[in-house]
Image 1 (cartoon, rainbow, N blue to C red):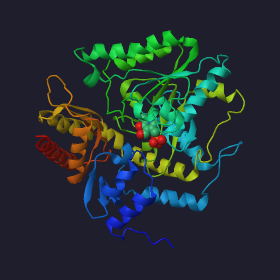
Image 2 (cartoon, protein in one colour):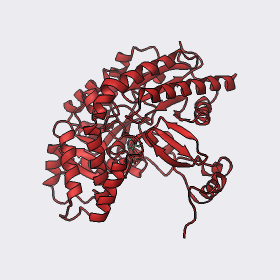
Image 3 (cartoon, helix red, strand yellow):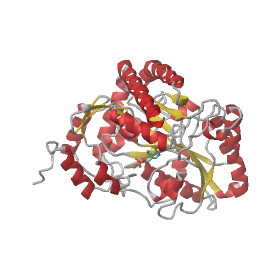
Image 4 (cartoon, rainbow, N blue to C red):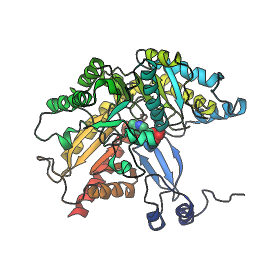
Length: 457
Ligand code: PLP
């Protein structure tokens, strides 16, 4: 019998973890010295660690626990489904009720004619599906040369070979021989870091027009799609200037390029609407979904596909693609219950009308801190750009990320989970945060920033 439980002392759990568990995005050898933070329970917006500390989770896990922790309705939905039908697949003309019910619900919630879902187990898998789907679509339309997918430097689209290739993260490409062929990149609309003296609106247009230049360079006959997150999340919560998305939409429409909105973070209320595409007025042909779809309570993702694309692919014979767990009944049942809660408790309206405006007001106050050059926010996702000189938006003399890591560590010490991306601190808290939770988060953030300043001096 496995005797490892919450009752073991923290150092024993950490030693076993360091000995046997290879963590994602971690220098594993360091764990033998530092030990990983062991989380044992969670409720609402709070985590409890193995020492009994209460930690405010301003990241919703990995941007995913939109309805907050501890919703037993989801546990009940999973248990019910496991008893009734724990597994069946959706290959070869078979289906089951949870997959049908969730697909119908998603068709109702998704904007315009995105009425079709291809299920995956994660955002990465869904983006792998998208690569194959768009290429298959164009081949079926008699345009097999339309294969290249254009993405953006510093985008994050997942960690599989396909997802990481679509992403524009240099550190990921450097390992494992990426990107795969026929993926190309333009620059991100990151005005704070790359905008210089250009006015943000002008900068947004310039960055969007790089897409048109890239299409001309490759030839529209060779380009299948453009993929982007409405707001770049893992890249540092990069909120594009208002001019950006309308221009991108115009260019995709003008050149017959499919538009894929990766809604893995922005979907299911994060930006104050069901989807980031609605917040930014985007009309995608495909949306990648995951994370908030089940609030992280069960692994599930998918591609929401327009009627036109689904119709062409559907009539092109068998699509030779799928996962054993595509439309897993337990994940579908959990996702359905999550969507019921988001809808019936009006959590997204509440974000839009109450929580996000209050968060925006409190977040903006942080710009008064000597270390903060910009406090930007979109719905329930935000970033603090740290700088030694606000006026010039200068970088620190130390290597990028050193100050961010100090600040992240002070947050951890103060029982606040904020993440750092380079020297930017980011948040993506549960949509269910109360005003009191927001006040506590701001108080802990200020304390952590103050302590960072002291360490730097
Ligand atoms: N796309 C975006 C925009 C993401 O932020 C992520 C994960 O953070 C992914 C895709 C990959 O999702 P997953 O980790 O579920 O594979």
